[in-house]
View 1 (cartoon, rainbow, N blue to C red):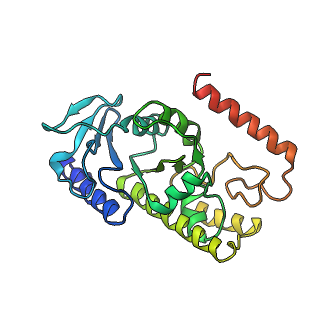
View 2: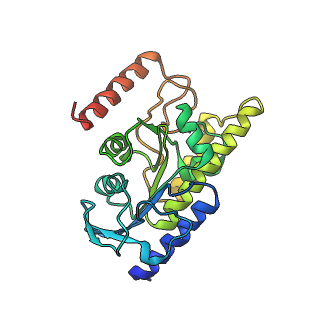
Length: 265
């Protein structure tokens, strides 16, 4: 059943409260958007706590982030550019969620991507979560930094900033944010216990096969491994101990070239 706009606005408020209640944001942090059609999107306003919104707070923008409708006193999130870039590059996406979950953001601040295959659910439903290079909030730097990852992944950490997830609808995009944070928390705690025991490449492939049989949406398992040459990066089926330094250097060079092209340098 297709929801009307008011119902979607209520759902955005409900998800905003969940994010706030789960300590995934503080004060007025975070933002949420939902795609209505190719040129109409609902989004949370700037300068408002996501835990205390009502449907009247929600703004509507076009594909360029320009305001179509907003009640007096409300303006679209200053990070709407980041959301629009996701929709532009991923037509399969229906919703985008940005938050600052504490464990995941800690990994982003430390510069550690979430790539270790340590639990079946994360490998099947989430995949690897790389780190997009730092960009100044509310500028085009963040969309430009995120863009190279959109083709291959369904979630990213934002260096020294937070996390960004996207999926077919709002609930699915939010669930990915929960999964990112839960994965990060487990990885953090396992490291305190001496380090996690990772799945073997064979077991990772078995989990990929389960995902294929389930027919889950998204781009995982990704066809690009950002950590080739490192042990057990489960985003690349061929990335195991057999990867050599020469292959790693070639991949790093190719990715660097792509990122620089996206940044217009």
